[in-house]
Image (cartoon, rainbow, N blue to C red):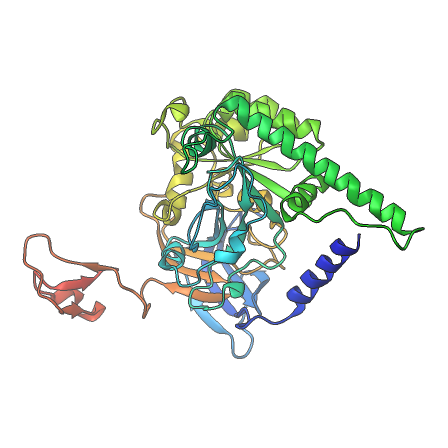
Length: 457
């Protein structure tokens, strides 16, 4: 229809137009590392990675840097794909639009905050990409945004992952029932859903309404071919997004805990021909792992969070392993600005609980979330041609002794643990009074006096 054609044209012009701040791309040669490719190439010892203009150009031994390209000796270190957090709320100035059980018309892209210090802290944990999501107050919430951690950019457009598919947040269970049915508005009125039954009813009614809207658009398209006076259906931004879900143009990421509700949503989606869904949290997904595999659903889970409310009382630290062993594309996420920078530790827990291999554990925070977000052609593994989103570790990233040293996004170094002018990590001696204003540099570290501030490296 004409409106959709106009929207497509506007979107194309926006994509082609330069942002206020162009997305920088860098070139660098990393020499002599153990490269954890998280691809069919496996682990490569004593290997170089050449990055040119933001992309991985070559992987091998004995590579030479082209003229003007910096060489960094990373001998003894580990290079892995930049970590991807499939469920985050960093870099947002708003999270929930809790005024209705369905708010698909709102979008996180409108409230991305490039000044959020959480972006820098994520880089300090080797995280290069986050899926910043609407909250879980609504059965069908707002649209999410996938960002790259280009710290220092002041234009929100410079953070967005160009070309990443659109995604939307759904939520099941207590969150939408508590926000709406059990609390109500200022008048005290109860708003559906007040129960888990009501959640399913809202889903089915909204999809049915979206289907009618889609059919009305299709009728208009047919009529206008022979009737220039054909009247288009009344536009609804909310239903436009629902129609796009039905078209397969928007990926669903659904807050969920209980197995019965996970199964319910798969039945609803099957009834409306929707196939693209990732169940977020999914603490009881292990109970319906064969059903998830048969549907083709993905799961993005916690490593070992549960029991913080009744509906999430029943879970297991073996959840991720059970899902992986059933052939389900599984990731481990943070849902936390703090845990966001420790995702390599969270992935390692699946080796303690489930004995996943190194590649399987690392895939949980790299290529698997990339697939869930539809960006695996660009990032998530170290392969020639992919974006140079890389994390360099002192020690293996799945070891408790592994520490992020360098983080690159599109080949640009945004975090350097030993040479970072923005570093504000200070440590005071616990047994002495703090001497205000005293800050020691790295050179002073070995001869510092008790009681002085020390930059922690």
